Image (cartoon, rainbow, N blue to C red):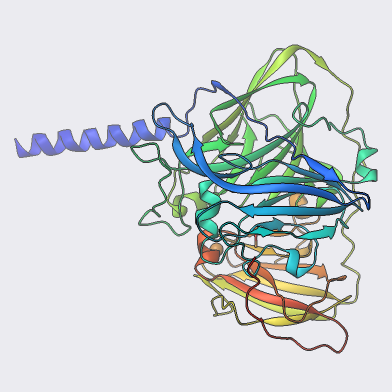
Length: 485
Ligand code: C2O
Ligand code: CU
């Protein structure tokens, strides 16, 4: 009888495992995909556009049964999309309505270090932080999220994140799909695990190398969403706002789509592909074509790298969004062959080359120290940062203040999806990524910018360093206490 019981238990185990494999990520696409509203703003006499952002706690219904306790910006989960143009002066009232300190970082934005919203720009409970700057970079899809040291993973997981869409004249003049929420869709992609009470499960799985990973996927906070399509071409602004999970995007019928932009803006030319990987923090703009009346799903496919396995979540196929094309599709846009300008740092004089080795929770053997400035860079100079993940599992690399050019990967020309401006790059183990970046302005010897792994647990556990941008002849200063608001 013992043998029978063991065999039965074994068979049940296999059955259970297969059943789980089969259903992981299966959704019924019954909910209309939420589209974050555009953040309202007021413009004063000198042209400054001011946005009010209130970080708050609330409740959100993702599943049948009890609502989930969540955080959001001007709402209960996620936040509105900030939209501004190159050349515009923007200002924010960031009010912390939580009962603990947080911060709000503008990921991908070129701006003064004390406006960056990193770990030194803490916003205390009840306080309002008022950053402002002039948008000086090209059109791009950026995002915002908390960056309090040691708390980033937790605060993002609870729901504080939103998209930033920057426009410029050149991009506005292109015939790309561009009607927000109609044929230009923000897509904030996040994974979550729920406990038996429908609350976010924040426990890091025992064997996980990357932090919390869930098998339920939310797009703009909607689980199992559909989108009704009314145009032939649709532009998707994909943002991996997950704590750790890697997505390998593709359509259910393997149709090709055009990658038109990466973190820092449009690619010089569109690139046609059937799969696209984004790690935590990365963005991509893609254009996909639909035929009248058809239904097709956007999914995440196994990446082949096995990274998600070692993060601890399912690495099986995950269903993300169902697109339902109408019977009659408007067809007024195109994908121009010439989009943006190519990164041009390859032939610039390089003032300094630096090496960064990522391993475990360290960069060059050190963990983050809020009071240590790792180095200073010279304003106006171009540097090459050589970055290697010597760890065997997943890391990526993000630099504040700048967009960089991936010069080469192990000496080879970067793949097309790394051919444009980037601020975050996934690091395949043991490959050398050479990143060129120019520090054009905004000096401050005492207020650092960050560079770090964007797997948020790794960042929280110290896989981060700090640099300052210096004027000619200036020395690295001292972190003069954090700026609490
Ligand atoms: Cu998206 Cu330093 O962060
Ligand atoms: Cu990492």
